[in-house]
Length: 481
Image 1: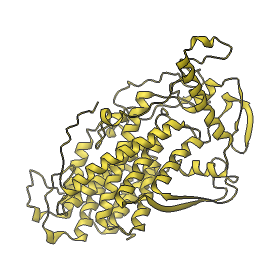
Image 2: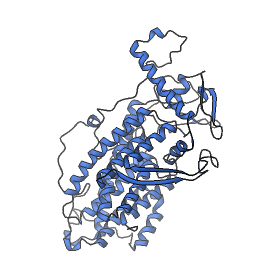
Image 3: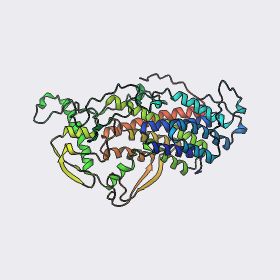
Image 4: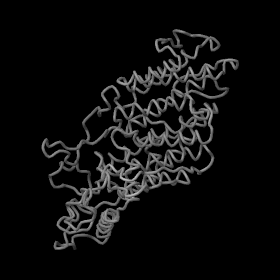
């Protein structure tokens, strides 16, 4: 079962993601594309399944052999991966060679080649579904051909980058990356909320999201200023905003080996498989745990990939539309001049210093705060795994070795830390919590991200079942704006 073809191609995908330092929403698209191509190829050999990007020509039952399915899904995955990662073709060629497949076989079936289903080869099936998917996805607003850069420059941050003072405390401020060069953050993929989704519809799916509390003014009202200019409702807003910021400082002050290990384990930063890829690894554990066959892996990763795709799109839509401040700029601005106790930086422990010197345990990402991407991706993935297996039971654990911290190497943790998750939901909740103790999200962003991910997973789950049961129901809900 370790040689399951779906897992082997997923492993190759994650190797390419690490090698190219892919970013979370793009990686989610990668996972969805590769595993949808695998699904469409597999569907040709199923009795009832319907394709997503290809009208299935169902091959006769005598040809429903594992060797044919393996070959067809391999060609599908290979073609899509080579398109997504043109610099990693040697990796994919190597896997095809190991499998004994000729990458030069490029024939497809289409209107110009109306072959009968009984005459189709696995190579033709794999090549065709990959081609159809790639043609469709080239028009999905992601701008893959332009390295995923936004097609327009409509987004402009309200606040000038550090070290400038914030103009509006409620909005995202780009951080200074390098004092010598003056390099500053650029908002990552501000167009991503408008990429073509699987089932996500903003008007329907975002209507219950509880937006974060904003400070009632663009500028902070200081205690020595005329607070009577605030209404009672505005004073409540200001107090809630202050409590949210103080909660982050309290978590910073309370950092210990356990919370630091949680923050770093789930960080999934540059050079990693990122949060969507991390959940692929966890899904792989579930597959091996439950001895899943090819059909199970095809369907589970098909559902998982498209839930991750929509989670990234929905999350980024809210990030851009709300453009909410990160804790670092909010705390520096709100508590400026006030001494606070917090973690002082690597190897320093807690310090009592002016609030404007506070730093988060994890590096603050280059995009707005609300909602948490980790929370949205994780809850969507955990829900799919729960729905597919029919149980919330996960039963997994991992050990964070002593001294393995990237923030405080050699010191943290002082001894091995074991992280364990009885349920899928436990893992998702810990992933979201990791961003709070990491100092880069407020609690509302975690809570609403979790809710959104769960909601999207339920919608995706309903749709994928229609595909693999061969009964596509027309969606008359046009609330897509």
